[in-house]
Length: 374
Image (cartoon, rainbow, N blue to C red):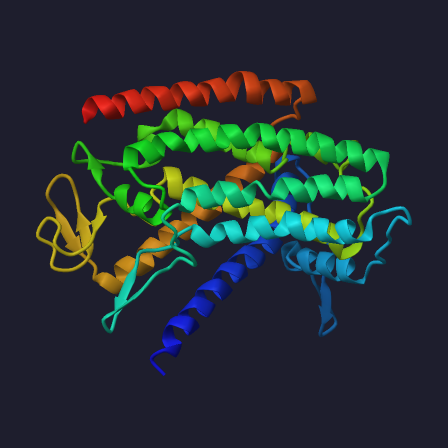
C-alpha cells in the first residue's frame, strides 16, 4: 500500500490543479459581467435563475455561468463544408491545453512534512520550470493560427494572422522581462524562486520581485495581457466589431476558446504572484529556527516574535497565495473595463519599439549589477 501513496498524491495534486482552473474560470465570467456592470452603472447579470417553492432565485446572477455551459453544450455545432475538419477540431484543444498545463509548475504552498514524508503543493517541480512555462505557452499560437486557417474563411484567416503576429511579438518581451529575476535569484525553478523571496532586504523589506525589479513587473504584466489578447490588446478577437479567428466556431468548440481566455487569466495571475509578489510567502512569517522560533511564526523587524504553529503557517501561506491569485484576476478584469483599445499599429509598435528595448536594457543593467555585487 505504501507504494500507492505517491501515485494517489500525484492524482490529488493534478485534480486540485484542474479543479482550481476550471472551478475559477466559470465564476470569473460572472465576475467580469458583474464588475463591468458596476463600472458602467448597469444592473449586470440577473436573469438566469431557478424557481423553487414558488419563488424565483437568481442568486445575484451566479447561475449565468451554468446557463452558458448548458447553452454551449446543447448548441448546434456547424462546420464550413470547405473547412479542414481535423485541424478545425484540433485548434480549440491546442488553444486550451497549454493554458491549463502551464499552471502545473506554479507552487501554491510550501512543502508539507507529514509522517516523515514530503508532500509538495505543486503538480510538477522542474529545474527549468520557467523555461517550461514559456515553451508550453507558446504552443497556444498554433491553436489560434490553425483556427483561422482551418475555418476556410478569409475573415477568420485574417484574424488568425493578426492574433499570431501579436502573440509572437509579446512572447519575446515577456520572456526577457523575467530573466532579470532569474539572474538575481539564481534559479529557473518557480518554487526555489518563491523560497528566495522569503528573505528580507535590509532586515525589513521582503525580497519580492516587485521591489527589486519593478520595471520588469510592468513589462511582464503588459506583455502577458497582450499575449492573452484581452482589452486593450483584443485586436485579434474584439467580439463587438472585429472579426476574430473563431468566427466560424460555435457550440462547445467556441466555448473552449472562451474558457482558454479565462484560464489564461488565472495562469497570468499565478505567474505574477510567483515571480513578483512572493508566491505563498507571507511577510515576516518564518519556519522554526529563525529568530529563536521553536515552530513556525512571525519574526518582526523590531524584534517581536509570535508563534502560530506549522499547520497554521501552512494554511496561512496557501491562503495568501489564493488571495494574491484572486487579486490579480480581479485586477485584470478591472483593466479590461478601464482602458480603451489600441490600434493595431500601436500594439505592434508598443511591443517591438518600446517594451522589447526596455526589457533588454533592464536585463543588461541587472546583469551588470549582479556581476558587480559578486
